[in-house]
Image (cartoon, rainbow, N blue to C red):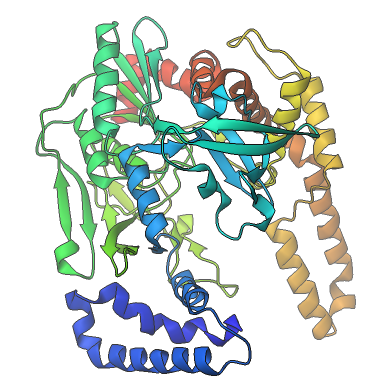
Length: 544
């Protein structure tokens, strides 16, 4: 039934919702009006005449999502509940059980109970599988079941969950939760301050400033700003965080759009907290958007040494647009450019491959730009660190293992089988890693490489062209080589996989706060940052 609403028809139809009220739509007014009329007629005929009963709301939801699928993943439609959730996320507080929750098909999984909040006080642990909320069975709930856990502060919710094969029920009293942009800051040694900035909500710059001032009062004469895993957020807060380290009236980011009024330049507006203190910024493949504005701008200005792995590569800017009946959409309106003029967008959603997937900008197509000191920096693929920590780069095998929740699930079992008392001295043993490999094998995990997929397509074409016999030996050799790679891939990625396992296990015992404390003594990126900061000539040499 849903196939009747073909998305290619709907793209121009709903285009009016995106561009109405802007100058961009005027030249195509007749075409837009024509497509609206076509769609209105089609929608009415389906709902009046289709052989089975239809749900207009579900049909419209499918139509909108199908249309937006052809754009980029950041252009999204929000119903009334989504609008409130987005407001809460940016404000930094919400009401619920105080836990990060993963929604699966038939259950909710506690990913992380926040220390000393409702879920934690009620005894819930990471890995607990919620199967019932009050009288609602999660498997029977069509919408996002995580919404069932939210409610007014002080109200009760009954949660039935499975843990290690046993079913339990607990009553949780909901409470307000303050989501900190800076969940941790501390002194790594007697002169190095460490600040973790996890999201760019409207408290990001104020919390970062407070943390830095506190660390300087404790004797910090050099800083590490950790943006790893930070998915971004508010653009103006990215400008404000950059402003902490650079003077007033410095260009931080430029946005360019086809709609002239969205073309903007953003400059620092305040006096800096400290323009001289040596600074290392940590990034990884999950540092995106606002994180890339900060790291990219500080890199372009030669104000900080960037350490880690290449960032995500999101150079697109979104803006909320109010629609009718309390709904809203977030639409990509422009691309952003760092002070040197580079756009670090990595994926091209508008020139897709034959399978409809966004294509990644290839390194040979990167363009070079210059920092203030004349260093080469490049566009097209995220922010490239000045100093790369190679083993921290996510590989296809480590990504596949993580996506299957194998690291998470192994950590759950580990928690119930082991005791850890020495936080900073903890180290995952080789025997533990061997158990992890056996766990992966017993799980039925099957990692299919892109090369295998391409090879299977090639052999299928060869069969059609009766060339199979001609290339059979080469095909078998390639297949054998791929199998050998897959057999050795886990051992070849041992360092990174042990790091992922260690992080997840530490959080089970000591929460995220404990993980940051563990990092200050053991994390490879922080150690690299320290070695650079402790060698002033090396620090200066990188920025020259």
